[in-house]
Length: 333
Length: 262
Image (cartoon, rainbow over all chains, first blue to last red; front, side, top):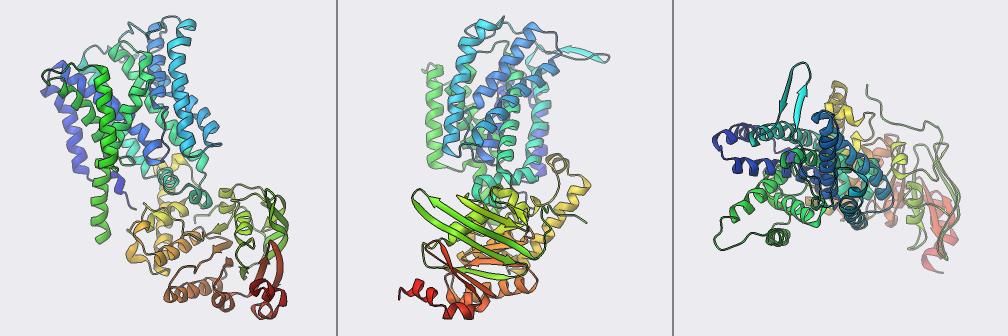
């Protein structure tokens, strides 16, 4: 069966995996490790957004909300409960997933295409508002500016070991243990019946339905898996940064996610990984540009400009180009 | 052996449309139309532009919901059944303007359809159990066989958007067939296709008919209708005005009137 999207080049993947294990040991600077950690967070976010926006063709602006909900869940529970971190992390994914399933059935059964994007935009705005204005009034430990002083994560498998993640290197390897299986999972998912159904929906939803594909369930599934992993990314962020703010659900983040997704190539596997990495590293390099004070506003403006240029110049992204080259070669054979 | 999803197992009458009416606002597109298709029959649905053929087709396949009346498929009432369930039950259709998954290869177009007519869940497909592997292999073989049958094998790895119009028409028939339908609905299978391809499509349809497939098709090209159809149903202004063999239809006065306005 054709698996063009998975780019079947095992050797390239092997090199990436080995490098990702060795690189932080070679680059012992905490700052560089931090960039690599954030790159992985964004890889998870972009790839999970890709599932609904790239593979299924439904642009969703709700991803920052799911990310923020996951981060808040994890931050609050770490502060106030004695639940083991792995349990908290799982719950940070399950809560946004449950919300996305409810929203998914509500939205998808009524609207298609553009209207869906608008409903998610509205939801994202409401979620941000709830986090910043409602939650502080009803949950202890949540300030209007966010959740502060979140304790570090402690991983424990009771009889065997207990280990508190303190340094960047700890968080790096912990996240690597999530990111790599996650990428494998996404690759696998796209070569299943569900993965092909999602592509079919993107290509021609009416036809997909006419051919016997349950489009509603498949769309909700893609939306829910995406929300789950956005929540996991947020759940990881809370003890790593030790602070979460309602800004996580702001427009800044969907501009960022879409820049990463479109630069990389929606609907491909390698694309969002490249996009997330490039746009995690690039702004950090700009920090060293002389005479520029690198404010968040400037950062957002640059992301917005990049998104604009990418959509005009390379609409299929880097991954799309790679996919096309592979296709041309295969079609000739 | 892998069983496919099949909801209905009736015999004799495959399709029965009873007193079907469809109104769009003040316009009555279908007015009390009744018709049927017997098992293994090859039936043509004709009529001048705007006579309601496409509306009837869309009601049968579920893209439109009729205002009143009933549609029975193999004895089961499917009037308000969702589109995908009808398809899983054995009702398959093609579209007048070719509809395919453009950025998927010919092969993938067939496989994605085939595998949704097999019984297995998300988890099984994710874990790729032995059973699922066997099913996927079957789907792949079926897809290959169909590409062979339609002479599209050399284009198996081409995106659907890179095929010629005629090849797309053929692939669409393949997509309609890969689910092993009990009834195949073809919406103008030869429209906008060159004469050589028309001849080819005619041959394929005859072969399928001989193999026992039940087919209902909308067609404008009279030579195709007269050569292929065992029975012809004629619609005009939303009502059925004739139903008979091609010979009878050619002599029918109301049909001549509807077409020629005499």
